[in-house]
Length: 261
Image (tube, rainbow, N blue to C red; front, side, top):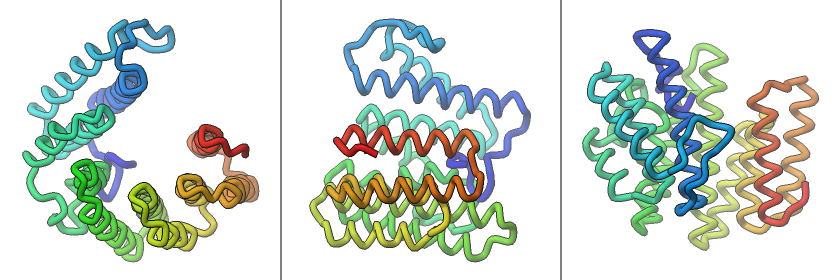
């Protein structure tokens, strides 16, 4: 749902939805591989990517740019979101900022402007941190979290309310991580508390809280948050594949920080 504005991105045809989702998966795989192993040139037996990750990334970027230039405005912004996310993953921040600049001032868009993919709003809010402007990024993230709260409060359908609450938690987690990595433990702890209070019965929120806690060294709290996420998932018998994957990814992340689940 990150590519959507108020709702999942609406395309003119089912084939365009398939094209976008396929590009997202391929781009994520290629960028992750290249970012982790910039000199890696071995083929992956589990994907359709070629032997050279850098070539894959450039090919996919070119494909996204081509599709963005020929698509309807909403679809074009969705493709731009994929481009900017890929460039940020690869730490090509100047290029990512240039892509955002071509769109105009995203932070000035109205709350109900659903033409702007949420992913793009979040990438724009975080962009200043990549240029040493932590305070500016924190202010933008706070404004975005507040916007998500307003959208959740005014949503008519429960599905839309839950969507904006999840987005708010995601932004609060990004804000907490930013504060901790910049050495502001107090603000980071406050952001963690906001995550916990935002969606106390949502297992995904507790996963996000665990991420933030492990970054500040609160290992036991992170373990407890993962355990709470699992309890909530079990209680609701909510075992959809996405939630299972998120719980597992959270445990893997904690393990990388030396924290056993």
